[in-house]
Image (cartoon, rainbow, N blue to C red; front, top):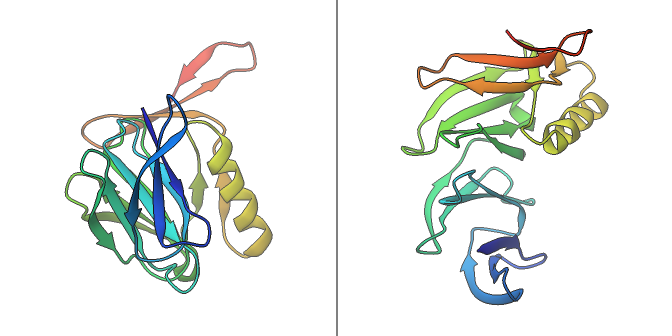
Length: 174
């Protein structure tokens, strides 16, 4: 397989063959990349950027190793996360107080969660969602923010359920 890594200090994403950890390609991007996040099926890598390009997100097609889409969600795009099957990308737009949801096939914004509504962070691995939650609580204490410590299952129709553990140790779907 291949890893797509942000090249610190460069306007590139490095492509590395993980069998021998050798660089095999570089992808030119709009600015200095911060995070390069792979869609769960590994077909795309979504990249956000440091100032002054932090209002952009670029999508790299992993097969062709080219940028196929540039999105401009707004000021200070910080974190990117995918739904478990990768059909949606969640993009936090800090300075505009919202989280945008994009369809990863069409790149259309399909929803926007404004800051005057509760913001709920979750992550399939727990790491990035927890970090985002902690950062927002620290930097923007006036926002109504929660961390969902549960696995979220999404249905094709857009509905969802959450898996939690009851006090007696049983798995519960709600």
